[in-house]
Length: 557
Image (tube, rainbow, N blue to C red):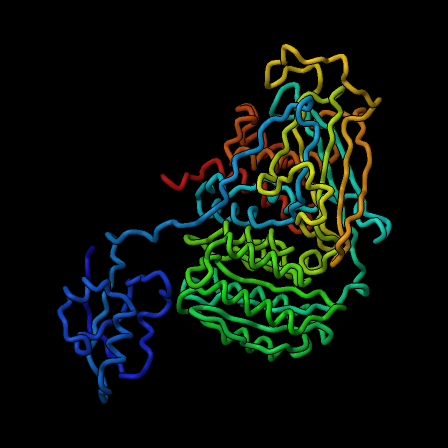
């Protein structure tokens, strides 16, 4: 490591900005060390690790010195220095396998309306890198887009299903079952007030332009949408947590923005303490007529206090009973902890998103604000029973972190996903029809003569949900016809788009079930033909990402 020593001028008692911004990682890139205060050689300083704690300790022990003194900057930013290590964490969730209908006719999962994975994948591809396979959650890529599904007629039945069956473009003799679930959209006049606690990570790890500064800009977009009936509190946490803004009505925008603007990064990350304080404020100011929600802005890099995702899940699960929702927005790169983000959001009756640009912030906190803030249903579960007379095998594409046991569907104590106003959920199954070549050999002693039959039915769809804040679930159910198979080229636009996005996600995941004949060129061509109106250019962006993936390098290259 090449060291460059250069004198700088520091007035004692005045913060030295040269070493700011390195927080909890012990980064010594520009740490200021006072040789006069420490009274040790540079070799000794390096042995001590050249950390900010050494400087602070020396400053506390030294007597006041008038005027200025010569300090030294240890600069390790030469070309020979090692790059910042990649420590991002993602859930280790193996891809769903093929299920035999004769043995497991029922598939059950919690809905997932999160979009974090799509924005995160986009960030990697914009950087010229392929995302880690575990960073790709196919359902979150698919659910990033609006499909224009038919809407429910009233809030009494808040979901309406749309289904389609098409030939698989990547596997001969197989088919794709497309299930779309559209949520009811609350009229603007029916939206309840918001009672929000903004929980902002101000630790040192958030000190980069794509973290805290971007988070503050994003929250200002949210402030734009508030009115005097809404209320906002702000909690910040670094080495400890503190209340920055007491509950303030949304009409006092200047006051709220001033509090946000004052936030600065530095210190370690007491995320658990911050969550505890945020929930306490939300509970103390709980409004049963409002949506009570904690909004967490962080890179997920908790390292002080409770930092174990499992222990935090226990805490969040208990707080969920209070009726306070949790929304988690992730930022940054290098140390992004997706495991933590997913654990918090899935446990806290909430959603997870990733903000890499102001455009994404605008989509989440302006364009799609109703879907992000106003729940229409809690604990939404989907269960599909396949007809063994028609379907031999099936494979759920995505939702690996959302799988539920069959018996969980009817158990109202089992937590599942929240759906916001006007949001939709899309699920895709790859199925093998009876008579086609199966993935597994037939069983020698299977009795095929007792296969039940339901004329014209491919599967049976059940949706279970609770009203916001409710404790007892309600059921929606309907049969899915087996008579509507179409070729992919003539399928509805929504189906073609969903299949193209899913194929892209499967390819990024390295799926063994997608043939080599359906590569990135074929995915781009299918997506291009299914772009539709694309008012905001989101679908065009996806096509460009598919093309970018052709030249992207793996993280190890």
